[in-house]
Length: 342
Image 1 (spheres, rainbow, N blue to C red):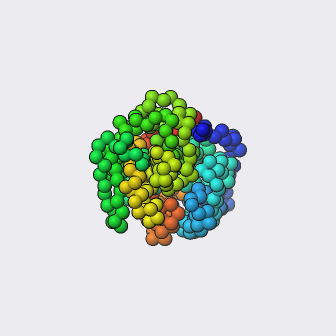
Image 2 (cartoon, helix red, strand yellow; image 1 turned 90 degrees about the vertical axis):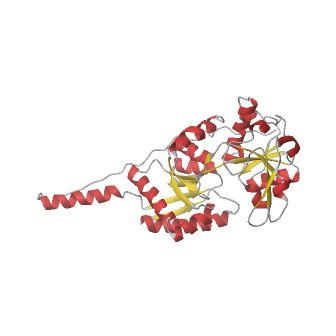
Image 3 (cartoon, rainbow, N blue to C red; image 1 turned 45 degrees about the vertical axis):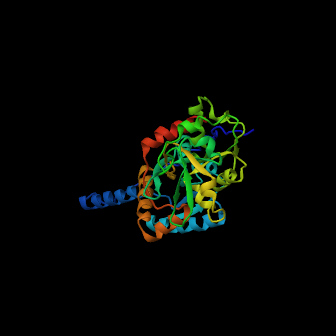
């Protein structure tokens, strides 16, 4: 039986260091006063620490994400004029703890973990990733039993590489929700392949969606035969192999297996979508001054607009660009989804 995690109870903040600004003048004349005021303004406008730590969550290859992260740190360091070091812990929650305890200043996180960092580590949500022109995505429901879960005809589309992908119940195009009637057919004892306990599209959003459709109060204990596959491609493969009759992933994780299993797109059918989910993005430590937070945020936007910065962001997390975070989405649908597991 799967045990769905509750929110982590993180230790109290150690506290922020006080920032001391001092100015002195050796002369009382207006020219000296103006000069001192200008110096103070410049200092106040750039009160970054000498070194910033950029925390990245590991993907498939820790060594590769570290290498790619160092390239990103280099261009960010050049933009800000301070040293930027990379920290790659073993989980989203480790990044949240690092932000809380002063071990990290900037974190790249998924949307649920971004809200957790905001709530439990006083981090500021500042930016969202953009992919394929959008700062939103969906979680998709997968099945190897379309006869049961496809309530209309299965349609098939072919991508530019010639791989076919099948859909039903209006779950195509990457905008949700879709397939609610089909989700109502899922029994509580179904074998469901979730992705990971920290995944928005692979756990939090679909579990909350299904619990709501089935009229279940607590999604954390509603599906005893669910299991964590460990990754989005692994969840797709669990459905492909028949280890699960139903699975979830981001849209469209089937493409990760298409080279090895050319029929994955038709054998594993997408039959429903979650609500739209804000993309992953960037949080900065709440211990930093507002001017420092603003400077880091603008620097990341500027970096994303350069060739080297764009290449580094793409290498790290396939990010096409960055934009200001949709605060309404985070305080709304992300916060309420997160609260279901509190």
